[in-house]
Length: 256
Length: 215
Image (cartoon, rainbow over all chains, first blue to last red; front, side, top):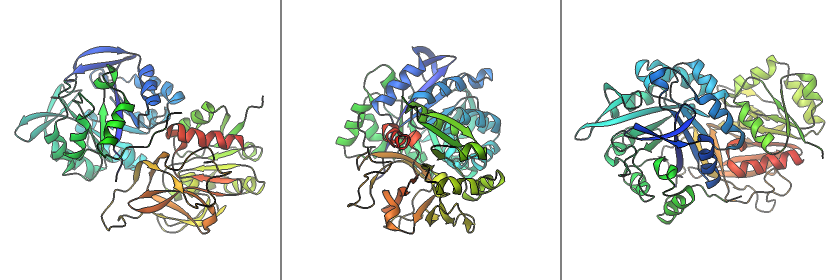
């Protein structure tokens, strides 16, 4: 039985941890390092940091935040937002990240997926896809944190990304993001049924039980959580127990 | 109080910051270096690394470090290889043709099986948290870097190849991937190798690092 990974997602704007709805209307939550440490101590399996204005302003604040996190957080970290080149990826990996997530720059220049994957290994290259539903069982790829349309079909782009070298897909439903309505099960299923690499479902986790359906019905390999953790509506420990009780494989975690 | 000193070999392969931070978190004073003299005078050595076996050996060769590492190993200085650094400890690897390793632990590096025991295709690389088990139920983990951990504890793996020692006695812990036993920790005298990333394995990994710096 494979282990489902429980991932905390931290959206960052400048020095702050923020949270929006549909990736918009961003609200400041607090200090990224305090929240990240709390999730680490609760036993989170991985962390995802996303600089949500990096594409818009062409800058990247995450470096310092990640470097600071590497001092007391010892689980894998994926970092995305504003990564445009091998140089950007090198920099963020040197700061302590284990994987880079690329969305906007990969759409503009798909070769970047191959370049990062060849240079650092496919396990390092996470293709981040922001998906909006545009029809029955049809989703369009958005970039720039859910602001820009691309005309690309999500499933087609996911398949192409894997061929180009993506080792993992972070699939965010813009429609569900921040709504607490549960994951977009059809979207996740549409992608997991077509690609061989692990898919992280992101957007919509309102209660711990939401992860059961996205894993059991939609075959998600990992679940990214934000709102539910940031607002302390639940915690990783409780979510892990819910998953275990439902018979899902999760990392055996002992509190120190 | 004596602060334990650890020398981490910097041969341009992999993310050293996390390894350094993990060791520092455990109370060690860390030196990153590719300098032969510094390595020869080290009291404990970590050989990290990610990527391809051949690239790793070539990088060590270019820096003139192959004999240096063999020399410190002969002197019984505690040495911990992590991920690729563990694989480099062995005699040879099948990755991209046969490549010679450091030869500190007899054995061979072979691909992680692409099929599960049931014959189903499985994802390569093996990425994620896997539970650790005794390789040898009688020997347990006494005296090894896993001394302070319990079987069933999970650690974080990212790898496509696995290091198989010739002798069963050099296998300390395994994880199970697709039904196959995959070596997770190997050891021979004061030389240990960790296939998982202790610096990314939470408290389980920190216990490994703490144990290593207390050797």
